[in-house]
Amino acid sequence: MKILEKQSVANRVILYEIIAFASIILLVWLDEVMDIPALFLGAVPTPINWRESLFESVFIVLIGAVIIHFTHSLLKRMKYLEGILPVCASCKKIRDEQDHWHPIESYVRERSDVEFSHGICPECAEKLYPEFNPYEKEEK
Image (cartoon, rainbow, N blue to C red; front, side, top):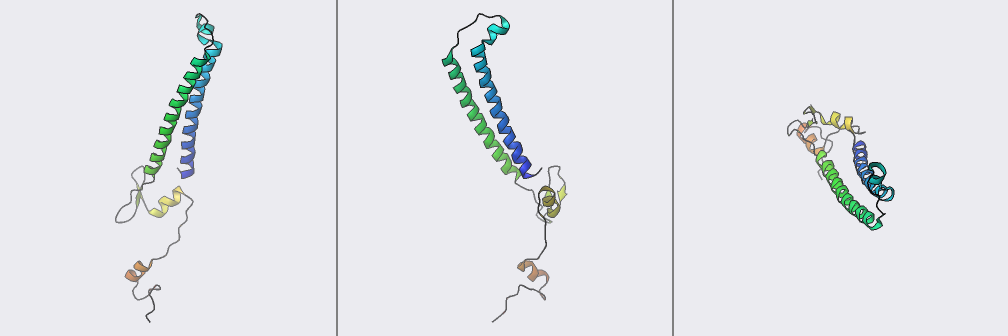
Protein backbone atom coordinates (compact mmCIF):
# COMPACT_ATOMS: atom_id res chain seq x y z
CA MET A 1 0.00 0.00 0.00
CA LYS A 2 1.44 3.37 -0.94
CA ILE A 3 1.94 6.23 1.51
CA LEU A 4 -0.90 8.32 0.06
CA GLU A 5 -3.32 5.41 0.40
CA LYS A 6 -2.30 4.92 4.04
CA GLN A 7 -2.79 8.63 4.76
CA SER A 8 -6.23 8.51 3.17
CA VAL A 9 -7.14 5.51 5.35
CA ALA A 10 -5.99 7.41 8.45
CA ASN A 11 -8.07 10.43 7.44
CA ARG A 12 -11.10 8.19 6.90
CA VAL A 13 -10.71 6.65 10.37
CA ILE A 14 -10.77 10.12 11.95
CA LEU A 15 -13.72 11.15 9.75
CA TYR A 16 -15.71 8.05 10.75
CA GLU A 17 -15.10 8.81 14.42
CA ILE A 18 -16.31 12.39 13.96
CA ILE A 19 -19.43 11.14 12.15
CA ALA A 20 -20.09 8.61 14.92
CA PHE A 21 -19.90 11.22 17.68
CA ALA A 22 -22.03 13.66 15.67
CA SER A 23 -24.62 10.88 15.24
CA ILE A 24 -24.68 10.27 18.99
CA ILE A 25 -25.24 13.99 19.64
CA LEU A 26 -28.01 14.02 17.03
CA LEU A 27 -29.64 11.03 18.73
CA VAL A 28 -29.49 12.79 22.12
CA TRP A 29 -31.26 15.85 20.70
CA LEU A 30 -33.81 13.78 18.77
CA ASP A 31 -34.60 11.90 21.97
CA GLU A 32 -35.08 15.14 23.86
CA VAL A 33 -37.18 16.90 21.22
CA MET A 34 -39.26 13.95 19.99
CA ASP A 35 -39.36 12.08 23.33
CA ILE A 36 -38.54 8.74 21.67
CA PRO A 37 -39.44 6.52 24.69
CA ALA A 38 -42.92 8.07 24.80
CA LEU A 39 -43.27 7.89 21.02
CA PHE A 40 -42.25 4.25 20.51
CA LEU A 41 -42.61 2.54 23.87
CA GLY A 42 -45.66 4.24 25.28
CA ALA A 43 -43.82 5.79 28.23
CA VAL A 44 -45.09 8.85 30.02
CA PRO A 45 -44.23 11.96 27.97
CA THR A 46 -41.63 14.24 29.55
CA PRO A 47 -41.05 17.95 29.01
CA ILE A 48 -38.03 19.07 26.98
CA ASN A 49 -35.00 19.60 29.19
CA TRP A 50 -32.62 21.79 27.16
CA ARG A 51 -29.98 21.97 29.90
CA GLU A 52 -29.73 18.19 30.19
CA SER A 53 -29.35 17.79 26.42
CA LEU A 54 -26.75 20.56 26.29
CA PHE A 55 -24.82 18.95 29.16
CA GLU A 56 -24.94 15.54 27.46
CA SER A 57 -23.82 17.08 24.16
CA VAL A 58 -20.85 18.87 25.76
CA PHE A 59 -19.89 15.66 27.56
CA ILE A 60 -20.04 13.68 24.29
CA VAL A 61 -17.95 16.33 22.49
CA LEU A 62 -15.30 16.20 25.24
CA ILE A 63 -15.14 12.41 25.17
CA GLY A 64 -15.06 12.49 21.36
CA ALA A 65 -12.20 15.01 21.36
CA VAL A 66 -10.16 12.83 23.71
CA ILE A 67 -10.81 9.67 21.68
CA ILE A 68 -10.05 11.40 18.36
CA HIS A 69 -6.83 12.82 19.84
CA PHE A 70 -5.73 9.34 20.97
CA THR A 71 -6.67 7.84 17.61
CA HIS A 72 -4.64 10.52 15.84
CA SER A 73 -1.67 9.83 18.14
CA LEU A 74 -1.92 6.09 17.51
CA LEU A 75 -2.13 6.60 13.74
CA LYS A 76 1.00 8.80 13.85
CA ARG A 77 2.81 6.16 15.91
CA MET A 78 1.69 3.44 13.49
CA LYS A 79 2.97 5.52 10.55
CA TYR A 80 6.32 5.88 12.34
CA LEU A 81 6.56 2.14 13.05
CA GLU A 82 5.64 1.27 9.46
CA GLY A 83 8.48 3.54 8.36
CA ILE A 84 11.05 1.22 9.94
CA LEU A 85 12.44 -1.20 7.35
CA PRO A 86 14.20 -4.42 8.37
CA VAL A 87 17.34 -4.52 6.20
CA CYS A 88 19.83 -7.38 5.95
CA ALA A 89 23.18 -6.19 7.30
CA SER A 90 25.04 -8.19 4.67
CA CYS A 91 23.21 -8.09 1.33
CA LYS A 92 20.94 -5.06 2.07
CA LYS A 93 17.74 -6.87 1.08
CA ILE A 94 14.53 -5.65 2.73
CA ARG A 95 12.03 -7.92 4.54
CA ASP A 96 8.35 -7.27 3.74
CA GLU A 97 5.21 -7.93 5.79
CA GLN A 98 5.08 -11.58 4.64
CA ASP A 99 8.71 -12.21 5.74
CA HIS A 100 9.99 -12.36 2.15
CA TRP A 101 13.31 -10.70 1.34
CA HIS A 102 13.53 -8.37 -1.68
CA PRO A 103 16.36 -6.39 -3.26
CA ILE A 104 16.10 -2.76 -2.22
CA GLU A 105 15.44 -1.57 -5.79
CA SER A 106 12.44 -3.83 -6.39
CA TYR A 107 11.02 -3.20 -2.90
CA VAL A 108 11.11 0.59 -3.28
CA ARG A 109 9.98 0.52 -6.92
CA GLU A 110 6.87 -1.57 -6.07
CA ARG A 111 5.80 0.75 -3.24
CA SER A 112 6.53 4.17 -4.74
CA ASP A 113 7.13 6.01 -7.98
CA VAL A 114 10.92 5.92 -7.56
CA GLU A 115 13.18 4.80 -10.38
CA PHE A 116 16.82 3.93 -9.74
CA SER A 117 19.94 4.85 -11.65
CA HIS A 118 23.19 3.30 -10.54
CA GLY A 119 26.56 4.88 -10.01
CA ILE A 120 29.52 4.33 -7.73
CA CYS A 121 30.62 6.40 -4.78
CA PRO A 122 34.23 7.58 -4.41
CA GLU A 123 35.03 5.14 -1.57
CA CYS A 124 33.79 2.11 -3.52
CA ALA A 125 35.50 3.29 -6.70
CA GLU A 126 38.79 3.49 -4.82
CA LYS A 127 38.33 -0.01 -3.33
CA LEU A 128 37.03 -1.75 -6.44
CA TYR A 129 38.85 0.09 -9.23
CA PRO A 130 42.06 1.56 -7.80
CA GLU A 131 43.67 1.72 -11.25
CA PHE A 132 40.72 3.63 -12.75
CA ASN A 133 39.21 5.98 -10.22
CA PRO A 134 37.55 9.02 -11.77
CA TYR A 135 37.28 10.59 -8.31
CA GLU A 136 41.04 10.67 -7.63
CA LYS A 137 42.22 14.09 -6.63
CA GLU A 138 45.00 15.55 -8.68
CA GLU A 139 48.20 15.94 -6.72
CA LYS A 140 49.77 19.34 -6.86
